[in-house]
Amino acid sequence: MILLDGKKTSEAIQQEIAAEVAQIKENGGKVPHLAAILVGNDGGSVTYVTNKVLACEKVGFGSTLIRYEDDVTEEELLNKIQELNESEEVDGFIVQLPLPKHIDSQKVLEAIDPKKDVDGFHPVNVGRMVAGLSTFLPATPAGILQLLERYEIPTDGKNCVVIGRSNIVGSPMSILMAKAAYPGNATVTLCHRNTINLPHFTQQADIIISAVGRPGLITADMVKEGAVVIDVGTTRVSDATRKAGYRLRGDVDFDSVAPKCSYITPVPGGVGPLTIAMLLKNTLKAAKREVYA
Ligand code: NAP
Image (cartoon, rainbow, N blue to C red):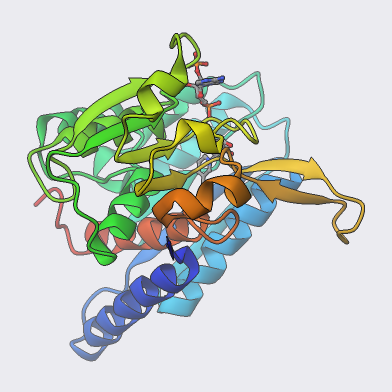
């Protein structure tokens, strides 16, 4: 069994990005710049955004963090988005989700210029992904593709079962794994809450990608010998022995499943660390005008 080390892979990608930024600077080119909009003070969101901004500094990008209180109006947010769309300095930007209930998240996401939509959530970029055109891929599925590629895991003709159909992870993952590409070319089954007899599908899978958020959902009896298991789930479960009072658990019952696998991601330290690296990669692509010429 080989552990898919997301931390190491993410560091390698960030080093590659940093080297490219150094080269851009040396050539007198435009330094990539990421802006992030954060609304409110939710602990998780503050940590995620802070880490994204810190990662920008580490690779030599410029970054701007724009913060609003929970009571920000939708109009204020839309005005700021318009400003960022028109900014010469900002190459790409994100709006950290979730937003407060009085704000229409979809309206906000659709206000972002697709050319600067480095989260890849705008319907134009989703459509481009489905059509196989150059686009900004959403960070989590893109990170999983990087893991498969960098560990040279065969995907061609394999049975791939994706569990979870969210717009940010499961659905795009299922589309990407079915593309005529590497990683891809897999025969994909997309399972979700309404799937009857989930084990029937997972037992036939060469590759399982679980993005649900239910600790212990995938048990050893559901996994065939030699399978590749990618665990996207990250759920906080209380743990009095930890300083924070909680620990993160994936969807996969790691201890019993790991011995059966050829490759498996740990939680934490698997898929998670790759998401920031892929956001940086998208920002670099935006700065280089690689997606929309
Ligand atoms: P989500 O929007 O809540 O989607 C979860 C999906 O799982 C839904 O499609 C849901 O079905 C399905 N589901 C729920 N219970 C199920 C069951 N018993 N059997 C089969 N399918 C079931 O979540 P998400 O945003 O995709 O995130 C999924 C997990 O990944 C969460 O733990 C999240 O924290 C984690 N995550 C991690 C990263 C990372 O960087 N590591 C990034 C993003 C998300 P319905 O569609 O019917 O509701």
